[in-house]
Image (cartoon, rainbow, N blue to C red):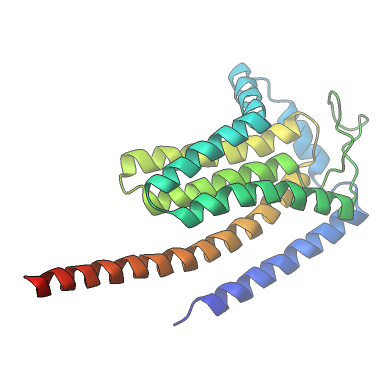
Length: 229
């Protein structure tokens, strides 16, 4: 049975859900539970927790993202996944434009100082969280490529665990810093899941096609060698 029509239907339904969530965010500065959860996160007073969040925040810098992408692209080229090596930097770059467009369309204000503690609140709009989107897109795709190309579980599982940890901690850090409501982070994850899902589907189509071409070429070459013998 062809799974692609089912995937397209599921993806479209998920997109409709995100549109609804975005409309609610556009008409409401915060969702029920946002203030309570933000307070609970900001009340965490564990030095190691704060250090982990600081590290995650610094890892989201432009230089760090470019470095991670460069290493990942080089690794993808080594395993002959040219499509992945092209897709990764393109989508990571496009994510910035998508985030900007969503923020400008929805125009949800940042949390106010009367409700949460923060320093140097950004002047941009709040929904969805750009940091959460960036982490999910980059490390979500790296998690997928690790699953596809790393057969040794002793290497693959730690890499994937690190990807998940960075995604989760990035969202928590945004709330901890007072720059976003938890619902902004959820919105960022939601939008990124749509992006990553579509990218994975497209990559699977290309990867299977190129794999079939490589298999056919290898078979033809083997047959030609056999005939010569």
